[in-house]
Length: 145
Ligand code: CMP
Image 1 (cartoon, rainbow, N blue to C red):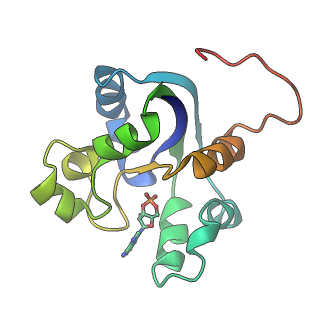
Image 2: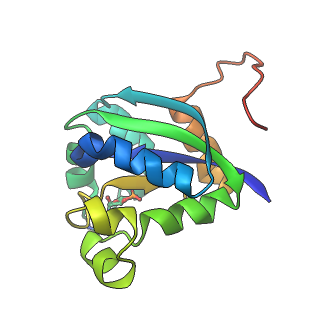
């Protein structure tokens, strides 16, 4: 099933942008929207609202607002799971042992500085795409659907 998902290149690896984009195209995803921006603490908090109660929340918000991120919409067959497979397990150390070719294994540092984000369901993909690329109530023709 053709799906759309939201990906983020996190502040720790924006300089690896070209290698990450190459991996994305090599896996056959279509990149249909993309932007670079720096999130405020409150925007990062809103984006990660479902993790508010977690012990790692403050560190996550601090990190995600510490520098620019690159957010993009990907479209492809099974894009949600396929993008998460390409980025690998959350903890970069686990990624290095279990999925050495994954983006977190290649570029991540640890559990927080883990290179990339991917939506975990259709519902979060919709919310997260709208967060970075608001439709503002205007009907726009989207690319590649
Ligand atoms: P991400 O895929 O962006 O979704 C939530 C983020 O929280 C995750 O990547 C990590 O950056 C962070 N995270 C998840 N679990 C932990 C953890 N146990 N310790 C620290 N950070 C975590």
